[in-house]
Amino acid sequence: MKQSVLFLVWLVSCWWTSGSSSAQTAPMKFGRHVAFEFFTRDRFLNAEMPTTLLAQDTAVYQALDWLNNPTDELHFGRKPASPILLGKKLNPLLTDYFTTPIKSMSKSFVGYIISDGSEAIVIAVGINKDNYHEYEYRVVENDSTEVIPWSKIQRLEQKYGAKQPYGFIGTFKALGKQLLVEVKNVKEYSIREGYF
Image 1 (cartoon, rainbow, N blue to C red):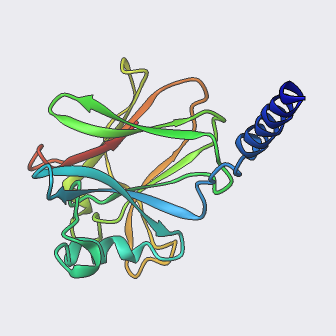
Image 2 (image 1 turned 180 degrees about the horizontal axis):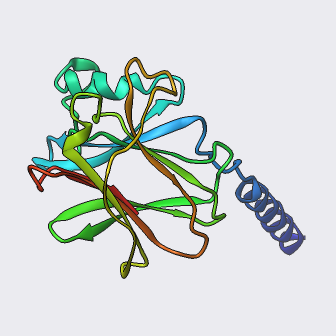
């Protein structure tokens, strides 16, 4: 009898734990956002930590607000990775994506692994009608082939709730390949930002 009770307790506990562990949450979607890279000051580590801020794809003007008010209480002293304010818009339904930091010379860029091969739209909210002639971009495939050499920003757009035109870098898709989209200031090379 004692063994039967112990077996029953064991069986119920197995069922309980397997039931709770098999409950899965739905994968998180990228959503209707544009991602921007910022740094936040970590008080405990006394260091700047990279963070991604998401603006609704109907309110990219928020990125300029974050740039113009980097120390306001709402944003906790966040500062953009660069004044270029490079943003990436992915497929809103995309669930199978990962980010990772990737070093390129002296800079660290954010790499997005998009396993379904869907396209990414890259914009530069910090580039506008007054300064677009000071910036160039390039695209490098698999860290070896420059598929678009350094080129001037040719197009300004005003979509996604922007209050002023911004630099449109392009729409990119490369299934099974690694692309680096890099934007730089022609006068000051330290002002550059990119995405893999």
